[in-house]
Image (cartoon, helix red, strand yellow):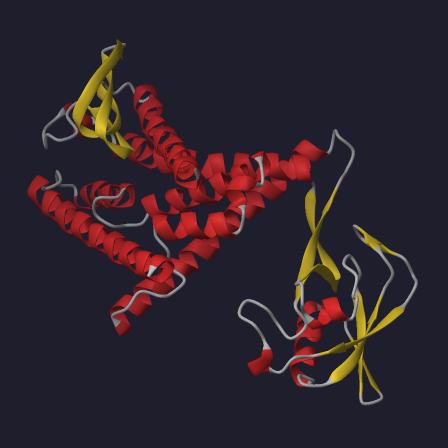
Length: 362
């Protein structure tokens, strides 16, 4: 079921990407010969609308917009101005990015506005962990750690992580607040005696305490403020995620060029579905799926604007080169570059997918 949901989400995102190209081309008065869902060979002619054939094709996970004269060096598409062609080429990625903003905005407007906590808060506790044995409660802030008759005040998540690391193998006392609701906590101070496991005693996926810390709470505001606050934080989230993706792509490039390997944190479709399934995203309901869709959409937007042949960013580069040099593009050079780009991208996807399959199933 998770795979089906992922395919449906990805197909939807690809279709809106192509619709971005489609409506941008129509806005620029370009003639569109075909709008295809999936890649050829063609399976079915759906209908025709304003000289555009809408078709269903056999190869899933994709789509295309065939603009008249796009494949012909002297065709109608290349007689349009540079700005108009760039507008059409980049419209798909723009729509994906805007959908990501919209998805995050809706999530925040419904679930609340994310606000960072000043102190580390206990969010979840693993069963059979030292924290569970000490009856530590959730939804309390950690104020201090007592060890060897010394009191270490905690003011940030980094502070509690550092003190726990410094006292592994010891039994210490954690000082916490009373129960917290959003930003407000009961003033009651509580102490809990707890053992901090050594590194060799820690199970996979846990820490010395067996705690998952909560660093953000989601605040509600008056109903008339929520759409505006949600829209702002949706925009911030999309740009923040875009920066993270670009950093990851930079690491990928450095590792491939300097070390000849793909970083472990890079995943393909199989890895993404497995991680989303293990985190329960596909079972958590509408908001989790909407947030996941927004994340995927921003990923598609960033990937498509990369200056790589075969991607929209690569096509934009050729248009800019034509503008700068004052010469019509050399079709054969772009074709060869696209072939190389396709082969490299396909090789990367296959390599990552094989590694994901081995890591997950073998």
